Image (tube, rainbow, N blue to C red):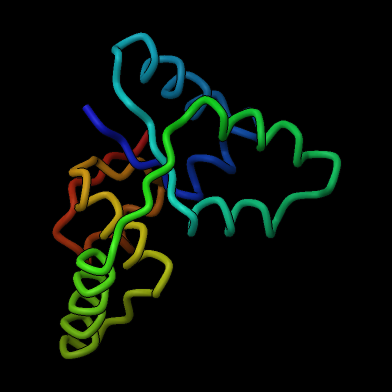
Amino acid sequence: MYLLLDSTFVIDLLRGDQAAVTRMERIFEDGDEPHVNEIVACEVRAGLLDRDVPAFEGMLRSVAFVQPGPAAALTAGRWRAESRRRGRVLSLADALIGAAGDSLPAIVLTRNVRDFSLTPVRVESY
């Protein structure tokens, strides 16, 4: 099974959150395939202290990197437009993360379940 790790999961993992650590261990034990995209990498890196960058870079080496193409960008744009018509706001970052997950297809692993409810992607919390 493919999993797209959302920024919340990666941040919790780097902080040593036990639920995130346990879930990451289970991902590898079960033979699942964790992924991130450039949005997740950018969001997480932006919030790190310089001393924490090596741990993050090490974590990135243990996961696959998905770079969805134009179709995923159009999907993300459509989801944002649909959300706006319903009076809701789907952030650009969450739309692109969701569309990256949709392109694999993957389950998005996040604590931000509410934000991804504006997309049709499968979401799992931890």
